[in-house]
Amino acid sequence: MKSRLLTSVATAATAGLPLTLAQAQTAVAPSAPPPSAFEKFVKETKNPADWLNWGADLRIRNEYMNNIVTLTDEVAGHEQDVIRYRGRVWASATVMTNLTFNGRFSAEPREWLKPSFVSAYKAQSGMEWRYGMADNLNVKWTQILDQPLSITAGRQDILLGDYYDWWLAADGTPCDGSWTFYLDSVRLAYDAKEIKTKFDLMYIYQNPLPGEWVPTLGRSSDYPVTDQREQGVIAYVSNKSVKNTQIDGYFIAKHDDRETFMVANVPRTPGDNGDIYTVGGKVTGTPAEHWQYSVEGAYQFGRKEDIISGVNAKRDIDAYGGKAKLTYDFKDSWKNQVSLVGEFLSGDDPNSTGKDEMFDILWGRWPRWSELYIYSYIYETGGRVAQLNNIGRFGPSWSCSPFKKVTLSAMYNLMYAPEATPTRRIGPAAGLFSYDGHFRGHYAQAIVKYQFSKNFNAHLWAEGVWQGDYYSQRDLTSFLRAEVMFTW
Image (cartoon, rainbow, N blue to C red):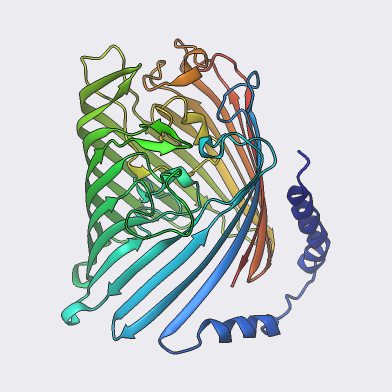
């Protein structure tokens, strides 16, 4: 790949390593340096008044992808190269005691170095300006009636579960990548400290077009952020009364309404009609020094209407999924951690008695463990990105910080498909799958992160999948990303 950003990030990171190595060999660790003039300036300007604070960030990503959507290099468009410029600015104003208004504005133009696979951009290269939007806009009232009760109403981020492993509630806008995460919702929270229990009740109404409620800066009608109109209720309870253990339980009801969108003047109907009910629970804990674990599982029922092998079908849902992680923290000077991770999401059995056994990830359609594989599901699941299902995966991961500013991590997963037939396949997918194999392939990931300063960091990220007999082509799919991020 001939991308300037990849080269510059790699050069900058390498240039910083000799200094870091020299510092690591020093016998006595130096004291923390005083804040720089720039850091003092940032602190002073971000809080211009007691009642107001604000901030901003700029993230620049160069992403190179090969075969991750097409699953083969024998068709045009299998190779993608894009630079994504995401800028955000946010503010929080406390207008009276315990009452805060929060807002965040975000935009992400993209420069396609090769013809894009985004249909709204008509498969061409060049700058795709898109639009700007308020991806957070809410009011939060805490300590209501002097009780540990709070309510947040409006556009907000809702992330439920283990940190950065949020399973079924995280991203309400999967169609725009990692540009935004928001859910238009009302969240009521109560913290019963005397019984070490937190209660959350949420109502969600998600419009597929971001400008339906809050106007966007520029035209957004070609870019739905999700595949259908969605409503839902989440009841979530978290208890820590057992020593070194957290027990969560939840019920999620999600209602989907299919809609037709005009994308580049072409009608598209990517969504479902459905009522999905999910009952689940999670247990996390630290049973002994160095050890951590997390186990989560859920069962789904209800009814869904979608396209099955080209035919519109209504079926009862009978699906399940689960994930687990066991971690050993060495607590050494390199901060070494090793983990075993596993996940299972049921697939649809085409020879069943007419039920839909495919697990629905709900609002969990984001790159939770892979940036690459979320795109490889597009032709497999009705044209939807990150609609993971019909998968079992297992493998080790490792991370460490050998030097003060450097973090390294790697992961391997063995992946298989419980069902050999992808029943939601569309377009050219008929020739991409073998229909008699269950081995999805070998997945590998490697990441290098470098923290230049408190306000500036960068990383290099690589992933690959060596396809198994679930696929017909058995080609290598690959993903490479260089990122720099400045935070104000």
